[in-house]
Amino acid sequence: MNHNTAKLTQLLVYLEMSYKFAQMKLAENNKTERDLRNQIADLVNTQRGTTTLNAESKTEQSWAVLLRWQHWIDDRVEQLNSELARVLAQKPELRATVRNTLRKNESLKGVLESLHKNNKAQEIKKSLYD
Image (tube, rainbow, N blue to C red; front, side, top):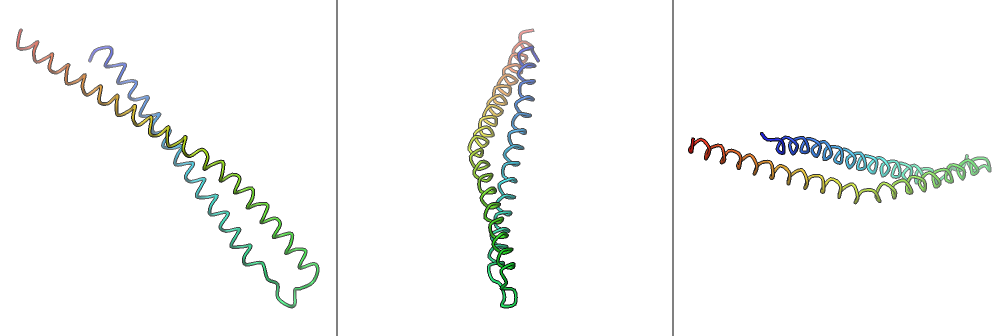
């Protein structure tokens, strides 16, 4: 293995680590998206379940508590939706990074494979002429 091939092999190791890191970031983004969507769904379902008061609890205090609870849920859902929008905005860039690092990785593997074949062919030729 010559000096250039060794450097390219080191670069391949770096690219593989870079690809795995990009995949990890995308997976983390997907998990965050899923968690936010679940939290929003839970809050919306909770909100739907608290919209009615029975006849005994129709006091002003009960209504005030209910309205505060509804307001808190609305605010929290708004916050979660903002966070979800931020997470979704990052996704195309993360996907592009994964795609690009994979392309570079695969290209370099092809170059190294080609170099190894050429080196073997040269060794065979050299041994035939010796």
